[in-house]
Image 1 (tube, rainbow, N blue to C red):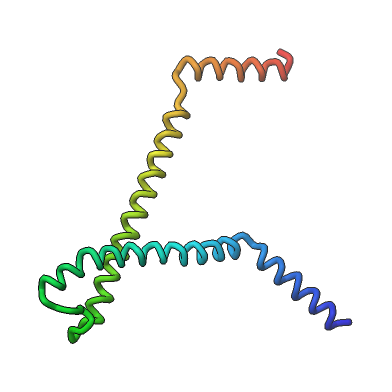
Image 2: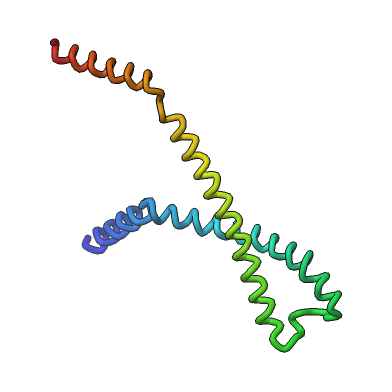
Amino acid sequence: MAKRAAAVSFLRDFKDFIQRGNVVDLAVAVILGGAFGKVVDAVVSLVIGGLVGPAMKAAGASSLASWPAGTLLVAIINFLVIALVVFLIVRAIEAMKRQARRDATEEAVLDPQEQLAAAANRLAEALERRQL
């Protein structure tokens, strides 16, 4: 009987753990991160293939990885390109958020006559509630 109660308690605790918002958010972030990683890899391949490849051919090198420190150079170039792509995406998202906040602020600002009319309506409603 004690084992069954412990098992039920364990399962209840596990269910509560899984249903917490932060666990679900983390799972979604991991899945989206994996998908986003594929997009970044594609952009990096495009940039490396489009820019570094022709430069390597012009320099007469068949492959950067064949150089003595080539693997390190490839890793550094990949890091810089990935960092640049992520920076540009984050910068674009932040610009969209700033524009949305600016739009919301402009909508929230009422002209003085509308503010005065709204205040008068609130005052009239308060007076009616107090029956004055």
